[in-house]
Image (cartoon, rainbow, N blue to C red; front, side):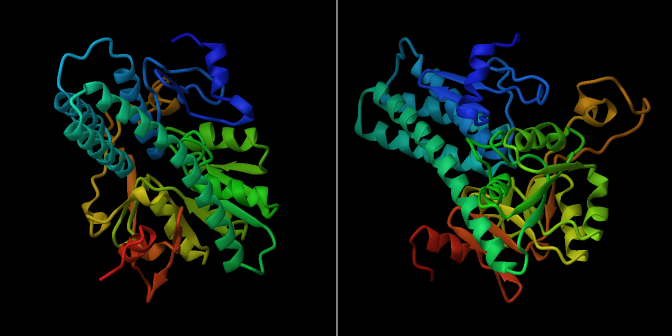
Length: 370
């Protein structure tokens, strides 16, 4: 798709990066495959990544579709069924992303409730559109709360450290969310408060989300930052150049085991060996209390081409023809390696070396625990 300079600028509005630009009836997505060299919209290809951003983009893609219906010949119940089928299909595209499943369930419930009280399919579609739009605002607010809680917690826990150097992995910023970011949101908050010495980002092979996206965001925001090879993380820690490691999450099990971009587990092991705190930053929607442990998390495998070719599979072949490839998209970091889980409601810490995530979630939701 040819670059659209006018609409591409909409994604950099007010000097703030955004992967998603939405107005009722239209949706623009930044083609992150082109970054950092080009800012091009991917309206047709629907190219987007980052669990929160995937959930919002999926919800908005359907909102645009129903907003542009010329004539829907069906009942309100059929309108609700149409939305449910569409959302179920979208969820099946990313089984690891619990945020997407959670968003779909909430939207299905809202439209089903409207269908039960209204005979007009237009009312169902309108309710869906309004609910999807609220999700966007809620995601940005959630991200900023994660940043605030994370920054405050780090300063409270490490009072003898005047300034922090934080290592992060993959991309968890404005390009992976509706805005601001989760792990990168904590880094942004530390920087805004004048206590960030430096952010280190891994290149995050094989698709290079760190070197292409996180580095792009850090440079854009003028945050002091250094890019390292994935394999250099242990050496960096050994030189005492890292105060904390903060990563995002695709899914967090009830016991705290966390699925995130491949390579996260290695960082956690290195952090424990060097006595460096390791934090997961994620909204509560990333927590799946139905999974008792990370053993139950389904890990997606990516195309072999990402390893066989340069540029994460988009360039020329660089590996020997005929070699077999194992390319999991994620790995699971056991809870015992995680110091705390930073959420929009506060930081989940351990009691007797174990997380009580269910209790935290229920209290955050205003429910009493048994």
